[in-house]
Image 1 (cartoon, rainbow, N blue to C red):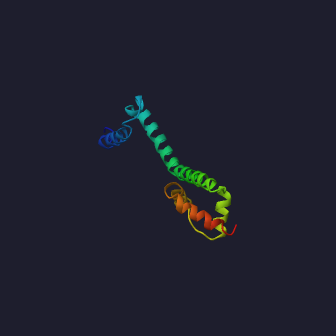
Image 2 (tube, rainbow, N blue to C red; image 1 turned 60 degrees about the vertical axis):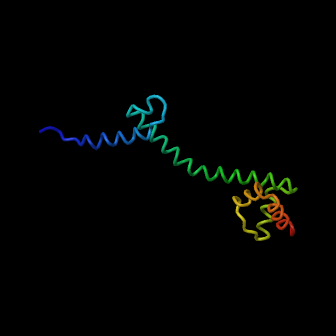
Image 3 (cartoon, rainbow, N blue to C red; image 1 turned 180 degrees about the horizontal axis):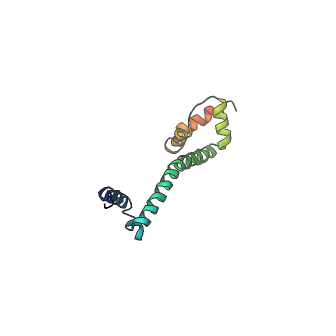
Length: 117
């Protein structure tokens, strides 16, 4: 009795993966074994970098806050310490947005935070 294989399903699986690797360079886009490895590697990078993206943005916000704070004559660490001491709960994302887009509002926040310090 001949061996029964579900060729329709395996072909569909390959077609779906090759569709995912469509823009890749060279054999990575059309040779099954190479494309499969490239796709799996790409997915692992995508997973890792979705996590890394969060720390990259936090670092960017901190740089922006530090630059704006130094214009006001105070360092980032002193500013954040003063904000916590005054119980001003404003996160780094919003603070960085204020620093870039609304410098007068950022100046007011710094002035209020540094009042006690």
